[in-house]
Amino acid sequence: MELDLRHLRVLCQVAESGSVSRAAVALGVSQPALTAKLGRIETALGGRLFERGPQGVEPTALGRFVLKRARGILSEMGELVAGGRPGNVGALRLGALRSSFIGTLLVRLQRDLPGRDVTTRVDSSGTVVAQLLANDLADVVVIGAHKGHLPACPPGVLERIIVDPEPLYVVLAADHRMACLDMIELADLAKDWWIGPPGGDDGTLAVFREACETAGFSPRLRYTSLEAMDAEQLVATGQGAMMCAPTYPGRREVVVLPLAGQPLQGHRVLRWRPDAVSAAEVDVIHRATIDVYSDALRRNTTTLPWWERHPEAHPVMWPPDSPVAPAPDQRRAS
Image (cartoon, rainbow, N blue to C red; front, top):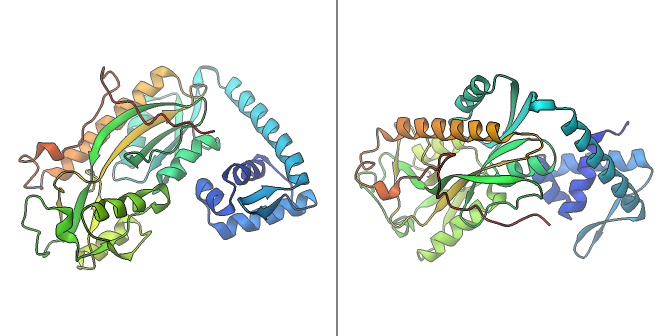
């Protein structure tokens, strides 16, 4: 097997994560697949690169030798690629959470950035999407996360708030005992089964459990790690309740209701590498994201009878020129 830059990024990610399982999440692959790839890399290099220690996996002497040179090669390649993109003309790699409006956003960006060939990678996990920047798999990402659980921002990466706060709603079967209400308390669903949220590795499941426990109960989780389409089919047939974003399109067999006091809130953030995306392009991407988010919101809330009566349950959007947008979490990757 011939080594290439992808293999070097795998080694660096395993070393930085300190765990093959965490590295697999960051790279968006399964743990068995990453373990197999790591084995092939070790065979090509002639020895073990990592060994299990009390704090996770640690590089061997050979591993430290390889990692030192791999990081140098990746750094030089990054500088070479950045220097070879005059005026940022060429491909624009977008990372984003899976959503109902991602297709519309891509069409909008292709129109508004005619000099760019926009490609995308989507995932249900905010952690995985955030890692696309760190692994040089994206130039700009749109991340969604619960309050206080925004993934660490890598050095040299800039960020802006797009939506904050973004209250999360609950989805119930249309024949649920509370389907006719305008608003419900989270505690009212203490005896219901729940469909676990997708992307649970990014703190979503932990935050949901914490909110339920604050409301006085431990959630009964029937299924976890399902994609939205599978989860909503279970909700529609009365198998449980689930949380959703305001842009969730819904279906006739379910109802979407706000939670009193907004016990679960998120926010959406734009992050980018300034050496790959110009300030003017960032404004274009920011504005396009706000516009398609707003369109999805209007389209999906016209059928919600409580929408006009509960403005406190609406998400707040922050355009590019907003003078008072809240600051994102200021954590940085070490």
